[in-house]
Image (cartoon, rainbow, N blue to C red):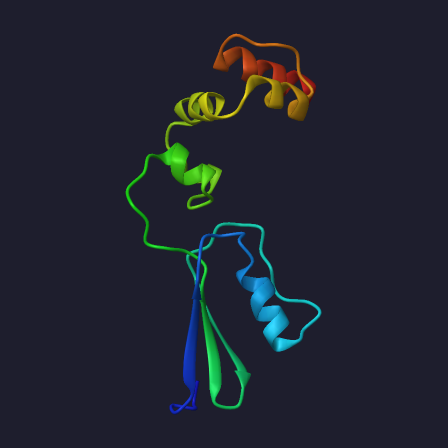
Length: 122
């Protein structure tokens, strides 16, 4: 920005927690650029003359495993290195009943059987 005397306000948070909604409300816009993806970008908006807002769409986070980072939307599922381990991790964190209802699949006893059932349903 060319206005070097502008005050700057930062908004920082995990993805999908409403940062863009706050900016949209402050700018009184009907439509903000909301992306349904994990991003580590920084966006700067001039709200009014002399006041700008910086949105950080990612955080420096502790070194959790891939599964935990994926569940917290810190990394995208495509960036998970060990997909089978990720599925097993998610199966350990989500109730079987919720998975059966969400995916509309038959009962399963292993992560491999879960994946086969989901693939058949799709």
